[in-house]
Length: 230
Image (cartoon, rainbow, N blue to C red):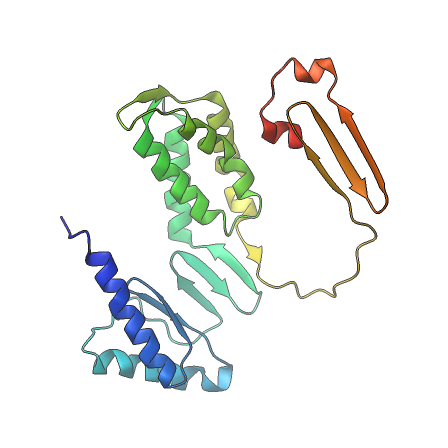
């Protein structure tokens, strides 16, 4: 087993490498032992060579398999960064991993707290590249709150399975979000906002507003606040 401080030490070392690269005018970010950089096309290759030189001078060995020459599409931390389409996408390897995980949970009968935490962490990560993804991890969060300790084993809820069903059917469809919209931005026709509590709801637009209590046929179901807000 590794030392608990290993990740912290690794991060401090790569932080130092990033700082040194910055003194040479190279924009680099790092997370543990992964580095990524960006520059304009005319300077990209020079910056890449400078980054390699910094690693060599620091006595750090670069992974030839993971090294990526300047290009318009780069993988970093399991995400494809596409500077031509201006999108973020989950990488194919990560898509396969998540798809297999979701299928496993669709057939899972019981679970421990740590298993749910692991599922939540992975889905939350890919949700940054799957536009409606965060909506469909809410039942995972609700299920996680039901555990009173780490050793408790609970039956997997039908609500959680429904979220997993969405991921199994639509992950590939919704993979990829725009970093920056390339369309011409226009002013909205109007602003509208609404909210709800357990007993009622309301909304407003410009100088007009409404509010009301929920009718009995809604209140008697004791819906979760997430459902009431929708």
